[in-house]
Image (cartoon, rainbow, N blue to C red; front, side, top):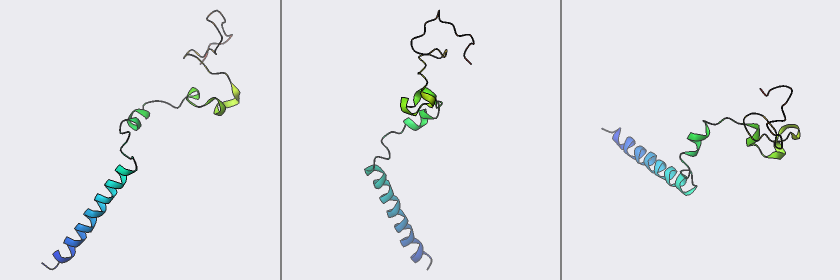
Length: 83
C-alpha cells in the first residue's frame, strides 16, 4: 500500500511530461506534414533531383528517361545506347 504513495506522484509527473512534449511538438510544427516522409521513401535520389550547381561535372540535364540531353532529337542517335 505504501508503494502507491510513490507510484501515483511518479505517474502524474510522467503524464505531465508527456502532455508537455505533445504541446511542444504541436507548437513547433512537428505534425505539419504527416504524409510527405511516407511518400519520399518511394522515390530514388536521382541526379536530376539535385540543383544544377550540385550535379557532377556540369553535365547537361536529361529531359527524359532515355538519357538524351536537352537539345537532341530522335534522329541524333548516340553511337552507344544509354544504360
